[in-house]
Image 1 (cartoon, rainbow, N blue to C red):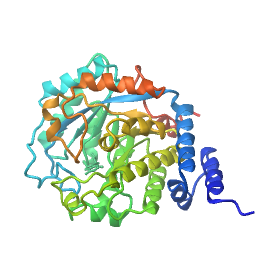
Image 2: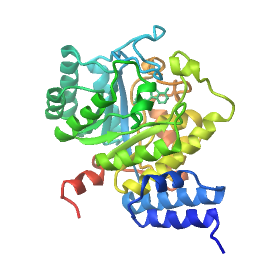
Image 3: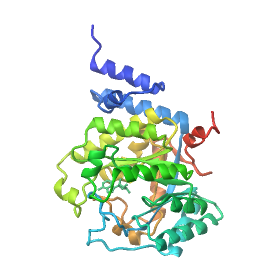
Length: 372
Ligand code: 5AD
């Protein structure tokens, strides 16, 4: 008798879980389980691998949304340069240090500084100053930057000032889809080159994509995972596309009933397949998951194989001005209540926060020959 679609799926899943190197068509197949039972098995296999690699620990990163001033005009992003409705801000150094100290008090161990993209000298100098000041804090946090495309010299300067990780999403590894969601001046090739510069500068490197973009296929998403594997990245941050009302893409493709939930499910399956393929990398359960499912989104991400959460540690005063998409959660909740709720919800799924060290991705040490 011919094996059923479900049986085929489960045997492919077992291969993936055992560490076989998958082809793109096999990754695409895993992204589309034929029934609910197979989907549960996918999440279970990815979560089992997460537990083998990271135990029951989740790495928390205190997120600081430094500035919403941006020189780019990405068609999906709420803080794009042409969005005149945004009230633009840049945190002062004292405000940044206060947030970084709070992250230390909370035991987060690492912080992420994210910002709109600028490469003028006063901005790159400001980042350098911030990095030097934060590095001096008594808990010596691991620092991740997410400040867009910069020159090799700037990446090196920031690294020397204390940054050790960098997140720069490719957004889509498909050049045509990338072009469709960006304005003419934003080039796929330049983005790739920036990723290579970051690698050369010695960072722990993270990238990622948006999931459920208009016109995006499962085949393209499978190629995104192959792109992550080929780039040998250490960290992944990806989440569902969320239309933002004041953007060209948000206006052109407003949500229909049920669509966000589908994108959430697809995003969870991407996390699971990425875990199975990439094994020992850090994978974030992103805020965009929580935007679709405020009660359970991030927890579902962990149960699908993610191992990092980035709670906001900035004051609530800027939260509304940093809305990349509709439905950003916790707009009015201060960092303390966010933390309380997070720790309780981790406990509810049998996970706990790592309260020591920087929570570096094991992959970084493995690819540098420091781990077997
Ligand atoms: N929906 C989902 N993610 C978005 N981002 C920006 N705008 C949106 C949106 N509308 C993501 C991009 C970017 C990251 C900082 O936020 O992937 O790299």
